[in-house]
Image (cartoon, rainbow, N blue to C red; front, side, top):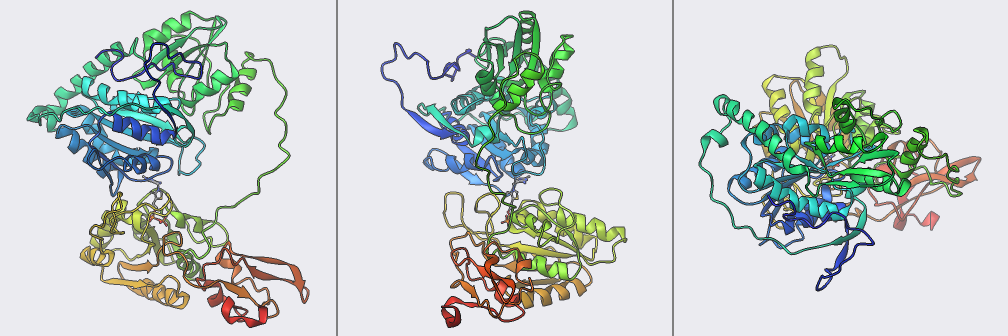
Length: 618
Ligand SMILES: Cc1ncc(C[n+]2csc(CCOP(=O)(O)OP(=O)(O)O)c2C)c(N)n1
């Protein structure tokens, strides 16, 4: 492949000359995720699929803003399905794309680990977004480690321009080297805006389907041969990388050199502008000969990389003395300050003045369910029934902390039901065993464990928290909402029918806002021997059907400050500043209240009423 195929020079920056160009193309402000979507569109992608997950969600949302005639963009039920959809399209000869968060790649890994043996027909690119610092994930895994495991190239953009350019390039690499390619982003890049020069869309003609079972059908006899093809591919890729636009040597001081990549590169440029830098736009395979040459050109070498010492370890295997994680943390997200401190500790920068303390402190905001969140009542009831609760991942995971504090375990998406099954089979728990799971999570990976629980005759209760949306990631549609990514009406999965088809005998749907019936139904569900499923049915308060009724108000003279309503953890409730009869009383923020009436239902003194009906306080 031509070294410059499909990519603009990566040396872009404020001072870049545009001499000779007829007309400078427009620059647009884009988030990293929007730039990845743009890069896929410019590369002529025809089929794209994703399951939402922060920080990757906006990639597919953005791709869906391009014409449907250009690209079929869809939500899939989970990341493996999304990758398989993309794989199918690549088999069928068009450029295909999938996006997911880092833990999503674990779900899709089975497909990736076989597809890497098969290769591609149309280009196949996967955008994976890591979350250093764990802003909104359950772990901090480093996707770069998948590079060596799957032997797939991993491209590492540093800014939104590179996010676009590298995504475009990734399709060319995929087709040229017959491999899936990962474009890796992190929260900081995905969600930061910068100016991006956009281009025109390529329109590569669809390729013929390649009828070649020895390559396309992974059975042991074929896979053994293909494993050798992978090794050969690694060799070719490494040779191509040597002077590709993905590797950039910025000559500077001979005293020390820094090998870096991704957003860490931009911090290094700010803190140590005179350093010699080897910027790696790829983390697998690594251009070891260029790395050796770079190291030989400076007296001392540091590797500055977020999370795992992937590059540092590779440099060590070359027998080169190198520093890295001795000075830069292996956990958390880097910042300009992390880099400055590390370089100071390494004796490369002179200690500078400490950053001034900010005069304004941000208000601590503990994570809370929204005012009127329909998930609240299930956890109130579970707590009062002293259940052992296997939780799952979604907004409702917040019920693990005060004040609801009603979840005992949370592992990863779709785990709750099988974990409850395992607890039940352990035979050690006196308490009722309950799994709680959201609708999107249930469709993602909750159905096989439900079938497993019925099949293995478990005695557990499943609470399906059906708020008809994927709330945690910002309200994406799924097969239970009856709308596609592009907002078209489609078949809506009937949860109850599906659950009954799995063999569950006890299934009931109730209104999450009716506290008495939630308690009653949950007691009955637990009493049932076998698998019981209680469907909690209320839309998310952030869904368009937002306001249930008029806001509520407290009659201070009737409130005895018993705290019953406070145990809901509703952010619309707080203590009044003025005291009545020696007590601070509860007050309701009418702007935040959605009129769900939960506090009114639990109030022990009838002190809470609807504003319109509460003349005493008017
Ligand atoms: C494998 C994986 N993919 C995606 C995510 C991101 N994520 C966390 S919870 C969730 C779904 C939440 O929706 P739902 O189960 O309906 O619960 P809700 O937030 O609506 O209460 C998603 C997509 C994740 N944590 N892990």
